[in-house]
Image (cartoon, rainbow, N blue to C red; front, top):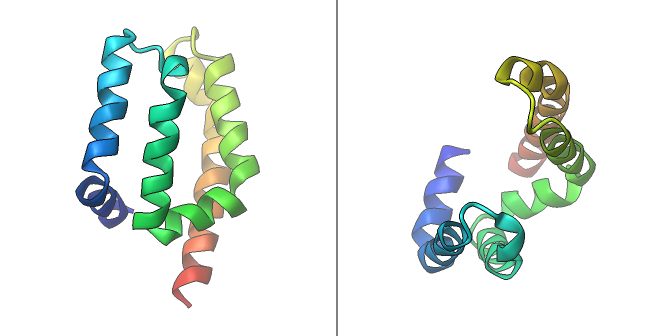
Length: 104
C-alpha cells in the first residue's frame, strides 16, 4: 500500500495540497472540506485503480471503521483501540482480499 500512497502523492499533489490547506484553514474540521476531499479521492482512484476497487468492495468495512472512530473519538486511546480494532481488522482483511484478487 506504500507504493499506492507514493503514486497518489506524485499524481495528486495539487489535490492533496488543496485538501490539507482546507483542513488547516478550518482548524481541523474536515466536514467543511468535502469538495477538496472528493477531488482528492477521484484523483487517487484514477492514479491507483486498486484504491477504487477497495473503496467499492470494502465500502461497508470502511464505513463501519469510520463510524466507530467517530463514535469513540472522545475516548482514551486504549478505549478507542478496544472499540475499533475489530473493525480495522475486518477492513484490513477485505483490503488484502481485494489486493489478492486484483493481482491475480
